[in-house]
Image (cartoon, rainbow, N blue to C red):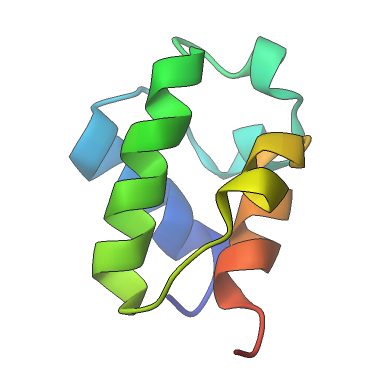
Length: 76
């Protein structure tokens, strides 16, 4: 995953949500169609896509998709 655009594409493809790059900075409450179950699906998709573990506790505290991208792309 090289950019937040890649994360948005992953969410569109894996979760089927109608979001775009402009939603990356929004609070999860403002992301169209988002609910808490999507975060668990996203965790699984991210780990499969990146080949590494993403800490669930940190993911649960992430305030936005941009923060999720930062977690998923942080050096191991």
